[in-house]
Length: 275
Image 1 (cartoon, rainbow, N blue to C red):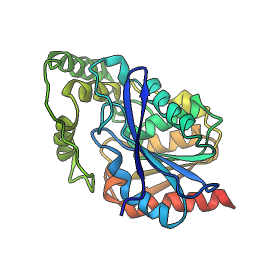
Image 2 (cartoon, rainbow, N blue to C red):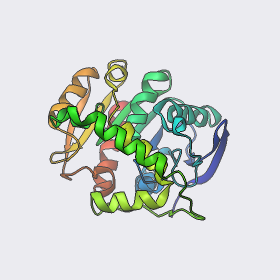
Image 3 (cartoon, rainbow, N blue to C red):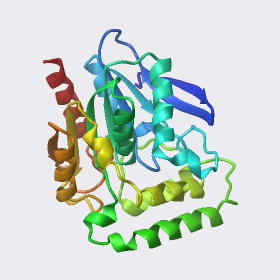
């Protein structure tokens, strides 16, 4: 049984949906951010387990995903906009002193948010998160302008694409990269998907990481095709006092394919914070 309530907030740029379990007044809250092409259901298993342990939780359908606004404007899919959406929800629901957990693209939002609004989150769990251009760590940085330009061009060429209804699925696991890509092309306008992919080649959260002064756990799969151990070590060095955990799941899909392990990491983090 799902223990949350579906809610929404009207922003300057459309409605954002989120799912709240606030059953335990005075107890900590875990705020959960899903990855690209997914929705809040990435976190249903975690939310139900957190409920059993008497922790509150909140998961968004981030802008462009799930039931949330899908307006085709490139400027609405930048990290500061996602962080502002989260800030509006946190203030509306009066959520304070929470643990912020982000998976993949959601982890980039978490990093950006924690740096912009340091007074709210009291801990970070970053799962399969790049904090810099992945081509840089693959030794292919010279391809960045080509990749960024081509994906943005495709996004603008496909602005005409419309659907009467977008695919909304209960996200249990990711079968693989191409399965994830296919879901992404059905869950949101293709232009939005491509704009967000293009942003990955421009991402630079090193400065944001250096501003993080709260306990942080960095989780990744040892054979992740998009993330290297070198990047994780550099991010850990930039976030003072952070800890690295190598998941038992070897690839990028730690948050979806190792849900019990991910939730245990969050629970262990909460227990340490309580002590």
